[in-house]
Image (tube, rainbow over all chains, first blue to last red; front, top):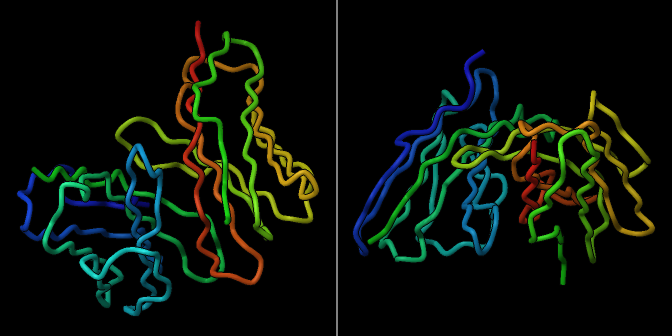
Length: 113
Length: 113
């Protein structure tokens, strides 16, 4: 069974730009969650999508948005990038039916300069 | 306010010894607690889940205890090996809330040969 695939692995962007990250969950999993990980704040929950609908949301500004497609693949978008958005962005795949075990991708390392 | 606390200082131990990591929480009514392992530059990997009505769970060399009175979980690795060196994250899911858990910042474990 293929794992969770995130693309790209690394990105360098300039302040003010926008970025789109992609996540393909494990086949059959309908829930995709996105997290931001920084040394200072740890792993922070951004949002979760289930069956193409945002089901849960963390405390991040509206510059952070996402969507999920009918094949469960998900994208996350960050607009008007700030230096503080530099982080490892992780997506987690769950079955979505009450099983809380999360399967994480390898992450996208975003650097904003 | 709600807090999940893990030792920020790295735990250094000798190969063969038992490593014990701590996760304390404040102002949570947990339904379950999970432990994950994270290697540098990679996403976390699920290890164990323990529910609020369980005192102890074991899996091979791993043991987790959960004391809802002390508001604490202990994670033990017996007969530790250098390959166990990683950061270990605890994640807590609240009773009655979203099933998406909140993560602690993790403790780094270094096992010396």
